[in-house]
Image 1 (cartoon, rainbow, N blue to C red):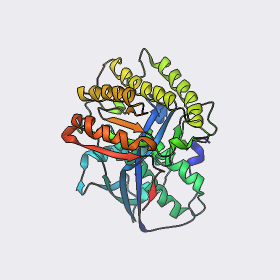
Image 2 (image 1 turned 135 degrees about the horizontal axis):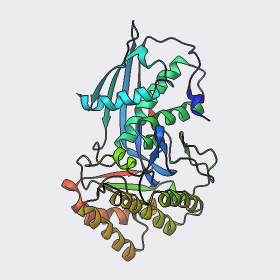
Image 3 (image 1 turned 90 degrees about the vertical axis):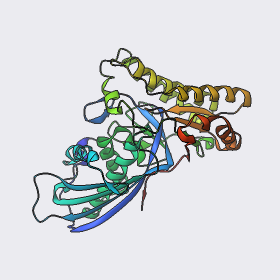
Image 4 (image 1 turned 180 degrees about the vertical axis):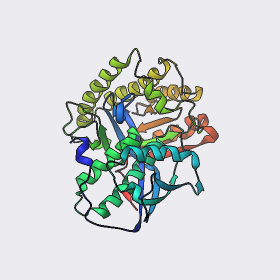
Length: 360
C-alpha cells in the first residue's frame, strides 16, 4: 500500500454530532526504533510487545460546524483539566493527517484523555495517546463511510497514529507487533505496523512486564530530539543494520521459544539504544544511577536463580522487567524484595502482554 490508499473517496453518510471512546495501550519495543526519515518513516524496523494495563483512554466528542473555519477547532482536557501545552502537538498531528481525514475542519472536537501511568517518563505515553486519538478519529470516518473494512480500519489507524508518534502505530493491535519494512516479514511496511505474522511459541503469549518507575519526571531530552540526532550519528548505519539482524534472529527465537537467545537480543537492544544517545552530538544520558543498580541486580539474580528474567529500557530511566508466566512467583518476589527500593517513592507498575486497543 502507498499513502494514496489512505486518502478516502467522497463519504457516503452525513453526521452532525457524536462521540467515540477508545482505550489504547502503550507498547514496549524489543528491537528498538531510533532514528527516522521525513514523514515519520523509521530508519530501521522494530518489534514490540503490546502492553495491557499501561493505557490511555480518550473520548472525542464532535459536532458539525455551520461554517468551515480556516483552522482546526478543538478543546483538550487531560486528566480532567485543560492542557494548553498539549494543543500544539495535536494541531501538528491534525495538519499532518488532514489530507487523509478531510472532515477534520468541518467539526469542533472536544478531546478528553487520561493515562493510567505517568506522562513523559519513558513509558511511551505518546504511543498510547496518539493511537487512542487516531482510533477515535477513525471511528468518525467509519460513521461517514459504512463500507470501511476492519483490515483497512486497522491499517489506516496505525498509519495515522504513526504521523502523531512513530511508536504509536504499534499500539493499535497486539500481542506482538512489527513496524518497518523487513525482508523476512511478510506484509511489513514503513507506513503502518502489522501483527507479527510468523509462528510464536506459547511461552511468549503470557509474558509479564513489571515497570520500575526510577524517575517519574519529564525527560530532559525528548524522543523527537533524540531521533533527529541519529541523522549525523557516526554509528547510525551499523545500528540500523544491527536492528535488521536482530529482528531476523528474533523470528527464530519466537518460533523456538529460546529464552536465552531472547534475553541476549532484548538486553543488547536496550543498551544499544542508550549507547546511541550517549554517543550522539550533543550527547545525553537518560539512565539514572538506580537504573544501573537495577540492571546489575537483575543480572546477579538471573545467574543465581536460573530464571529467565531480563530487562529492557525505553527512552528514559525506567526499567521494564520481562519474565515468563511460569516464573512469575519467584521473579515478582525478587522485584519486591530487591528492586522496588530503587524506584521513586517505591512505585512500580505490574503489566503483561495485551491484545491491542479496545472501543469503549
